[in-house]
Amino acid sequence: MENEKDEKINIALWKNFISFGKPYKKEFKILIIVMAFVGIIDAVFPLMTKWAVDNLITNISTKKFVNFSVLYALLVAIQAINAYLLISTAGKIEMGMAYNIRKIGFEKLQILPLSYYDHKAVGWLMARMTSDIARLSETISWGLVDFIWGITLMGTIMVVMLIMNWKLALITLSVVPPLILISLYFQKKILKAYRNVRKINSKITASFNEDIQGAKTTKTLVREEKNLEEFSDITNKMKVSSIRAVTLSAIYLPIVLTLGSIGTALAINFGGKSVMNNVMSYGTLIAFMSYTIQFFEPVRQLAAIFAELQSAQASAERVFSLVNETPEIIDRPEITEKYGDFFEPKEKNWPLIKGEIKFKNVSFCYKEGKKVLNNFNLHVESGENIALVGETGSGKSTIVNLLCRFYEPTEGDIEIDGINYKSMPQIWVHENLGYVLQSPHLFSGTIKDNIKYGKLDATDEEIIEASKLVNAHEFISNLEKGYETPVGEGGGLLSTGQKQLISFARAVIRNPRIFILDEATSSIDTETEKIIQNTIHKVLKDRTSFIIAHRLSTIRSVDRILVISKGKVIEEGNHENLLKKKGYYYKLYTNQFIEEQSNALMN
Image 1 (cartoon, rainbow, N blue to C red):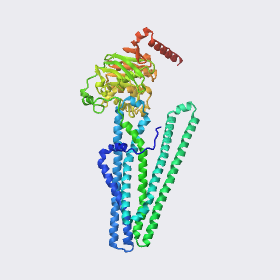
Image 2 (image 1 turned 120 degrees about the vertical axis):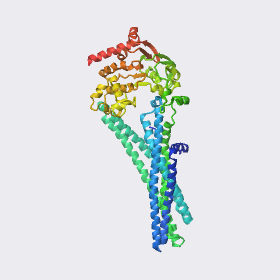
Image 3 (image 1 turned 180 degrees about the vertical axis):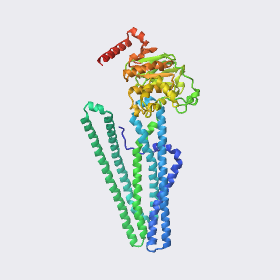
């Protein structure tokens, strides 16, 4: 859990955040003007009361009464219009800024490399894009409403009170400085208490999530009692922290009310004597009492605004850490200008990919600093099928990730058809890539929708053809709704094998020149594996392909097998040749074969 600290308000940070509201300059101006009017008119109402007391009670005049009533009704109507304008304008600013920042943030997420996601939890990113941005846009828009209103109202009240009776004004307002200090002190304490409540609430949410997702594990390990004990401990901390936060709020409000009452009492005491001595009118005394009561609300609001800015600053810093993140892989400006980027590709300028691939003295290390590949060299002909075999951590996935340009070499070059892929935009590689993962991800929607992700303008005929090619059409047709069958969140309504076949169809429909199978058959049953194996030969025909294999029986027909160990090729050849050598591959294959036969006999 991230720590939130009490810090001074970072003006530069908030200026930077407000810059996202540039498209709403007009709305900001309207909001400032409207709130200034609201503050001024709020300060006028006690003057209206003063005039009414001094002029209508002792000397009733129908004409004066009618004029007063009309003016009062007019001011109320103006305030009603102002209320509509401020709510609609502030709401537009709030939603607009949230939209702009989310759009920029999501755009940044699209272009950040996989290395960024390696070090960021999904929950962290979700919080930045949702709750943090919502909180910040709300703080800016509605904070501005309270700030302009509070400053205008306080300023107007002080001016009016000083004009009416400067001595009484100073006496009455003498309670304001301690009120400001007390408000700032308590707002800090209250916000700190509620921060702690939010942190514990996050732990409760995480605990709920873990228990729901791990329900089967909980039952098999008989952890119900332990889970309940841990959950009760967290919720008890939540109760204690919540009571503390509520208690602080309960202490603060009476103090504010007491100080307000003291201010009112001072106005009554000194003002009353002035009235008795005929130095001040009854209306002026009532106006002073109204102003004294009215003055304390904006003071409290301003203290709350500054405390909220201080609290929300951590959210602002986290959002900017995402928005200002610099991608490790950046296409040079001249490349983007000629070939486009992810959002505006210029495909007509792209050279067609045939599929010849060269790794030239490629070295690579992750941020931790340990080299995974060191002077790695590889030449793959166009249309050649390559299998990568080796232990976990040997460098198989790194080779594929570098080829896909999810990462870039620390040293050396990678060429596609003789072109250094750094001289082309990243999307040039990605558009010619078909990638099938070990654990396929499907998006919410129908089977048809998910296959179309590979080619958004695909026709129904193309979708069916791709499905037939990967032997998925039969099982899809047997479903009640066929291609319109919902897959559920993450494809949860389908089996692993069905999801894998759909991901194959999604990759095939793009007609890519380079195909990657990342242990695509390791997590499915043998029957589905047979179906997929029957399609792989057809799918990979005339395409350059890399297969990361767990089950070695699935790669017997590939053109070349590379046995990888510690980032180096230690054996190379086709299936038959490698078995004849009786080396590392032979040992892996025979051990796996014996294991599979034993499992088959046991079953």
